[in-house]
Structure formats: structure tokens, C-alpha cells
Length: 83
Image 1 (cartoon, rainbow, N blue to C red):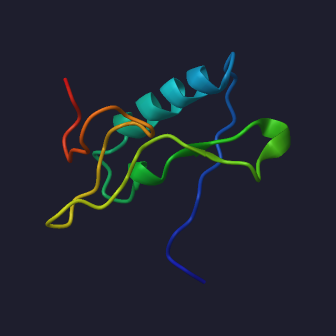
Image 2 (image 1 turned 90 degrees about the horizontal axis):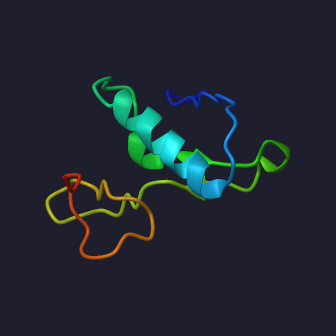
Image 3 (image 1 turned 60 degrees about the vertical axis):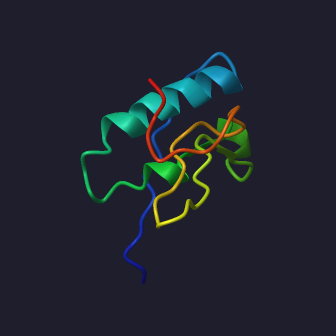
């Protein structure tokens, strides 16, 4: 058995965009925990859990870090969140 596990935390949201915002805020709020891989955050409709929508870009960047911006972001990828 692998060392990676996934926690499923159901919540309500008005639409996919609202679900993305909630999941992004939740993921960023726990990134201080080394066990969390926020870049792999996805959302799905409760009745379509096999259809997952990525929240973060997470593309690899030179030197090892990954892009922390939202999926489908404008502009270049970055290892730091834009302020």
C-alpha cells in the first residue's frame, strides 16, 4: 500500500467556479502541513466523483518547483502566488 492517501471532504457550492474558489482557499489554508500536496487539489460533483476538475496549474518549473497559480491562468507560470 502506498504512503499517499486522499481525503474526501464534501461541501456545497453554487457552481464549479465557486467550488474551485472554496477548494483553493481550503488547500492554501493547510499548506503549512508538509503532508499536503495542494497542487493536486481537484473538485467534482457529488454524483460524478470520477469526473475531477483540477484547481491549480501545478506544471513543473525549472529547478523543481511547480506552478501554484489556478488552472487556466493568464500569464506565465510561477512558483509564488500572485498578490
